[in-house]
Length: 255
Ligand code: NAP
Image 1: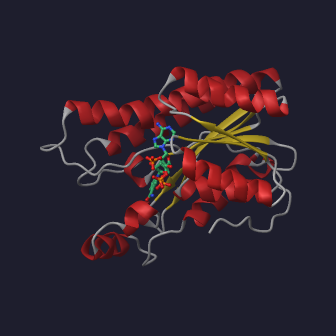
Image 2 (image 1 turned 90 degrees about the vertical axis):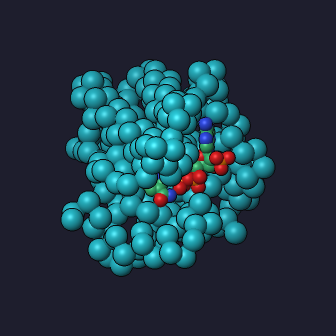
């Protein structure tokens, strides 16, 4: 059940776009942002789940628009940013979250698998940032948080296609941070460890036991714990932070 948690107004009057918002980390982030006073555009490819979320946020008094679309398609990416500008006159925050997480090793992955993941997790993030920055520069700047991963910072087994795509997320974050710093746009990322989303719950008990043991803190994370870190980086509290990739991983990358 979607609920909007209590907030402190940390994004009051900010216009924010969250991609891939209907599920998992994106949904937790949209709910957290709504609670903190953001005016929201939520995007996803899944129209039904997106409408459920829109109703939950609007029902709690939040200002929210939804745009169904595929971030890897240029016109869809442009349209979700345009929706924020049309509704709120500006875009202050982008959370480039939409992504797919296939598990494949090199022997089984095909070139088409690689292209498909790169199209959504790589090209989709690039397009989301490109159009968001165009809008942000018209109103003096903004803040972007990209979803990288422990797989975008370190090598792992069975990540031959997803892992490289998440290195793209880390790369976009660092390069855009430097390119845009003087123009008032901060670009950061979170690098979550394994997070208990619907996808994880479908995995075998053996798989879940293995990933749990790989995190020094002794458990996997919750979507809301990632949303808290995204909120901090997105907000003005992180005003001197850009180009950072913040692990939210129970100590995984510290090993
Ligand atoms: P999720 O629960 O599957 O949510 C992702 C959402 O994005 C889904 O609603 C998905 O729709 C949507 N989506 C997929 N392709 C899209 C596209 N082309 N355009 C717009 N929306 C699209 O995933 P999650 O676990 O919350 O992951 C969110 C982000 O965190 C991803 O970038 C992922 O790489 C990153 N991350 C996740 C974990 C983890 O353990 N969960 C760890 C590290 C990083 P469908 O359901 O229809 O595909």
